Structures are given as structure tokens and as C-alpha cells.
Image (cartoon, rainbow, N blue to C red; front, side, top):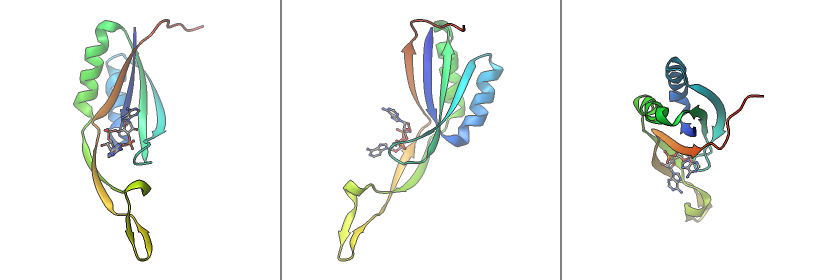
Length: 110
Ligand code: 2BA
């Protein structure tokens, strides 16, 4: 068995959750925050049999789209002006989805 940890954008999470549930996958949804943008995103925990991993990944791929997002540069990269530090906008491409696929030693419900 594998555990897929999928970090996705909030905008995609509801449709993805529905899609995965309709295909019979068990899913847990967590509200999370990305370290770089400090913005909300969604992390899904999906426990799947080994042979179902490709099906789960293709369901994620079909829903999660990458998007461009503007953010203020972090303090390590801000420009300096006479008045002090001035943040400037930086465009980053976020997602589709960031996936970790882990082997599960044991799965049980007690
Ligand atoms: P965030 O950390 O908020 O990152 C959002 C997007 O900002 C990233 O999209 C990437 O395009 C950009 N970014 C991140 N760190 C950067 C940096 N040091 N310099 C310039 N741009 C940077 P994604 O790569 O698609 O990541 C989306 C979210 O997935 C991340 O949100 C984070 O929550 C998670 N994530 C990505 N890689 C991870 C990892 N290795 N471990 C744990 N979580 C990860």
C-alpha cells in the first residue's frame, strides 16, 4: 500500500475530492499553508493499493492546473530605497500538484 500526499491549490480541491471519492478512493483533506507564498493550500492524504497509484495520479493530473500568482518578494530579496526596504511583486507558477508517494508499512483500523 502507498500513501499519496498531494498538495494542491484550494481552487482545485473540491473538484479533486469529489473525483477521487467517486472513483472509490479514501481521502483526508487538510487545510495547509505554503511556506513560500504563506497562502492557504490543501493537502490530501490518499491511501491506495499499489496498483491503483497510477489511477489516483492521473485523477489528480486531470483536475489540478498550474496558475501564475503574484507575491511580494521575501525579506531576503527585497530592494532597499532611501525610505527603507521596499517589497516588489514577483510572479511564481504554482502547482498543478506537488505529490509525495510513500510506502505504507501497516494500514489498520482499530
Ligand atoms: P508554497 O511554498 O507557497 O510555494 C508556492 C510556489 O512558489 C511554488 O509552487 C513555486 O512555484 C514557488 N516557490 C516556492 N519556493 C520558492 C523559492 N524559494 N523561490 C522562488 N519560488 C518559489 P509549487 O512548487 O507548485 O508548490 C506549491 C506548494 O507545494 C508549496 O506552496 C508548498 O506548500 C508545497 N511544496 C512544494 N514543494 C514542497 C516540498 N519539497 N516539500 C513540502 N511541500 C512542498
